[in-house]
Image (cartoon, rainbow, N blue to C red; front, side):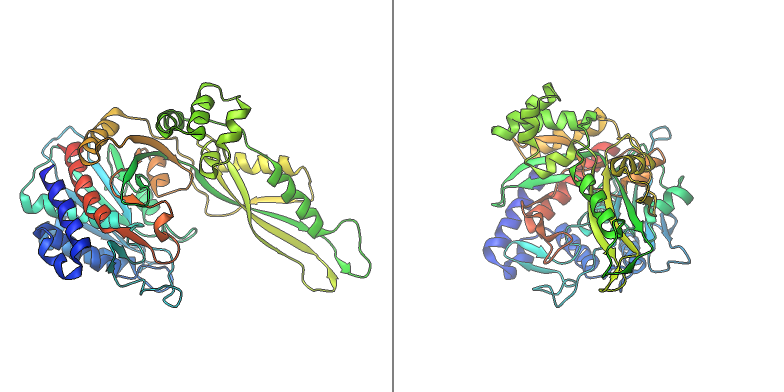
Amino acid sequence: MTELLACACAVYSMVAGGAAAAAETLRPDQVEFRSLYKELVETNTTLSSGSCTLAAQRMAARLKSAGLPESQLTLFADPEHPKEGGLVAVYPGTSRTLKPILGIAHLDVVEAKREDWSRDPFTLIEENGYFYGRGSLDDKAMAAMLVDTLSRFRRSGYKPKRTVKIALTCGEETNGAFNGAQWLAANKRDLIDAEFALNEGGGGASDGKGHVVEQAMQVGEKTFATYRLETRNPGGHSSVPRPDNAIYELAHALVKIEAHEFPIEWTETTRTYFREAGAGRHDATGAAMLALVANPRDKAAETVVNRDPELHSNLRTTCVATMLDGGHARNALAQRAGAFVNCRIFPGHSVEEIRGELANIVGDQGVSVTTLAPLRPSPPAPPLDPKVMRPAKQLAAKYFPGVPVVPSMSNGYTDATFLGAVGIPTYGVPGAWGDPDGNGVHGLNERVEVRSLYVGRDYLYDLIKAYAG
């Protein structure tokens, strides 16, 4: 708690006093962390022009300089993807019976063009209480925190009971690219073996005015899948229209998908989230969330909840058309028309099951529905395990008094998919927080509040110690 207060005071001083005072107000360990974080953010790891392998090598060098022996560091790269490598570091525990815990973070980032950004996306810039840069939040903040945690363990001589592992991987942000977490799960399962893993996906939410209003532990996520709908036709001259038109047939199919509402479903996590978050909202939506938990057939409550796109998606599988193509000439009937439909599949359903459901919704044998690679696994949601949830809530009560920690299911997907598929339950941790506008993640001028980064760093350090000790 003393460290937390010191951290908060330091960061508030930085915001008030400007960059010149920053170096004077940071603790020595924070200065070291800032240097590590800066190096990682400024290492370009985009698929087009960057190198996760270089970032992994630099993080390995940081761990070596902290005193971790080379025998505890494993740099890996697939020969066909030499720039998409990663790092696994193992910090041994004293117990021979307790299983390890694993921290995972992805090194790769979404593409960022300098001409689009107000600032250089690959230069860490501190401005008005925020750090700016591509990956400053997603996900190099957590990657830096994990490396920093093991470095602090080594420098302090800490001896955990559980072995603590970290895996820094590539490929999370680019669907279809080489994925390091998937590769480790398939080829180095023993290296990353753990009772459970800590990942991105959780975290706090602020009111945009510096006040944290909620902390979440991600417990489960949807499965990502994309399908190709396609119609074909002999075509012909546009001066002689015919009833079997490929574009219209595709359009009719998409209208049916648009109109289809997948039914409400629950996991233990989503039911708990709706109950606890609903009770804390004190508004019409919160009341509707509680009513829906009590009676999932309450259509009036569902109507209110569905006004929030995030909550609507949290209750069901969703499918939406994302891209269109068709035709070969402006003065000819289309011989082919196609669309990509992206689905976020509720836990408990396979990718093939939803493909079949889409075909049934369309109800037209002239419209083919094909699942596109890569095929993601559909692991079960991890349990709401007290040994995972309780320490997170206890620490949050010290770091964020009065702020609830609620379990949540992500509508998106992370590398937790691959770990869950090989039997490693994976949780997105609370701690660092974001603003209501999303902080530019995947978009322009990505940023994280300076205070969020430093407090989140200390929270994660203490959380890992609580699990490991």
